[in-house]
View (cartoon, rainbow, N blue to C red):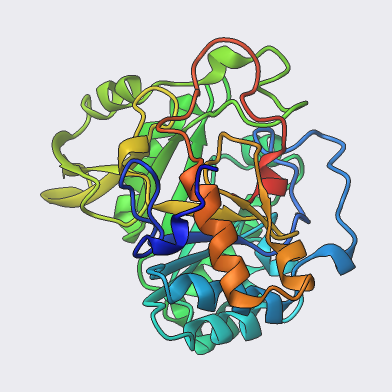
Amino acid sequence: MVGDNVGAVDGLVDRFGRRVTYLRLSVTDRCNFRCVYCMPAEGVKLCPSKDLLTFEEIRVVVETLASHGVRRVRVTGGEPLVRKQLPELIASLKAIEGIDEVVMTTNGYLLGRDAVALREAGLDGLTVSLDSLQADRFSKMSRGGSLERVLESMELASQAGFERIKINAVVIRGFNDDEVLDMIEWSLERGHLLRLIEFMPIGADTFWSDGNDNGCVPAAEMQAVIGTRWAMEPLGMKTGAGPARYWGLKGPASPDGQGRVGIISAVTQCFCDSCNRIRLTPQGGLRACLADDSEVDLRAVLRGGEGPEGVYKAVARSLWGKAESHSFDLEGGAVTMKQMVSIGG
């Protein structure tokens, strides 16, 4: 059977030679926002707490992956800060041999409350989802979020020692595509690193599946808009460990050309050939690809007593079945029916 020889492979490598070094770890499917690209307006059916991986189970998975080459962990949700005692988990992950960096993506609403504790736990970096700088528009896109509170929390995080906060903005035509230039300049002025994300066909009953597939603003169009205000120097993916392609910018708020902006172009400029990531859902589902609903149940492996070796073999087999490329495109419905909030951002 395909994958029977995976135990002989050095590290976590798929059939196409792509080596996994990066885990996106979702710790909850709960969120205090209802963003239009992430879940339906009514929310989603939540997983009972007993079905979530415990911190101890998460540590076993991460220790196992670290022993086979994973070096970076990004903690996500849902909204990760709604999970109780999250700083304790961060400290635990930071103590694992082989893990070089632990970072987190958050909507920022609770960040001010926990920023100091997260820094003391050793969290290396923060990414805040921020789709608009207009309060009414931000509230509409997040279905009730407070821009003022998020910005206040980011300031508190900066004071706690998170010096260069990354910002993720999902660009949706007709919602916030007219803010691209303003968001870049705002980020440059504050020393943040903005990444613009193409709207992706993920999840049933989201804004995309409601017939708004033309909401995707292609990366090439974003680049053309950015080029009207800044001279752009292509930097590729070398600036970060994730999927963004970066440009150096020379112009407003970056006269020396040291400013940066990233674009994550999963739909129109596929980066599957350089994929180094796997995802773990809050319930222990291991996804080798964001666009593939196939998951390996690591919770069953752990609670079945198979231990680290069973975890490794399950992950390696999942990788061996990973497709060469996903099937995102601009036509038809969502590629994956599972909501982004349940997969992990």
